[in-house]
Length: 303
Image (cartoon, rainbow, N blue to C red; front, side):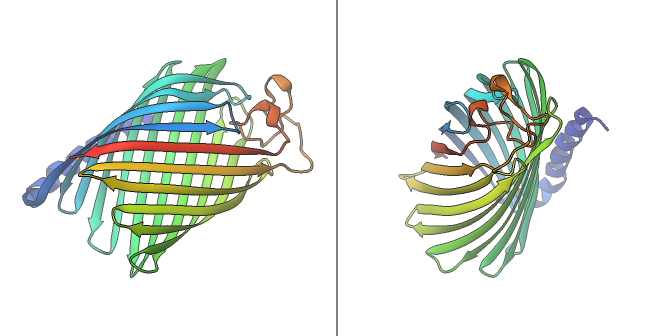
């Protein structure tokens, strides 16, 4: 079964689900529209990049079913050839997601995304997620598979997979704690290995009047035998009616292994890479310690 056929099946499934369930749930329907602008700054691990993302969302609630259609256009999205070289392109993305809610017991859903852009950029993404509510605790599971292709120095094909499992607990109405496990894998067609990263995170959320403050620390390792230590802070605030501001900052310190193998790894122009190395890293950082930063800010209006 090819991916084109799978895409058609997913779209048909969502449409069929809406048609079947609509007569039973139309009495409680509501529509929510969101428009906004987001910017991302990143530096350290790769070339400095600032991306701009105007976006729009249309959400439709019919009792226990929520459907969301979204569109995003990204200016200056960074891509790499996996060999330590980077460039920027513009891309457009469309996405559809559905979530079924079984009251206070559980939620489960999925989604599909398609993106096109310069340099023959093409990406399809499949998403699955579920939540289980047990008193004041919540268990969340998320899985994403992304198939990406574009041309940069050569034809590049990438398969990205992400799994996130988390356990959160609301200590009271003002404070919540989270423990998360992240597994991320990247397979480049021009490299003979799969890069993966395993990260554990411990976080806290503080809830105020229309405000949520977040902070966390994390630690992990990757297939290049780097040790990774990091921290993050965030703020989400609703101002006036329907306006929302979000800010997040992440910093990670990468500590290299004491001994590396240069067998068939990504080397870039400097030839300093090694097998198992992060394909998103600058070539001049191979085998060295470094700090990576990312800052995200968004402003949105819902009505």
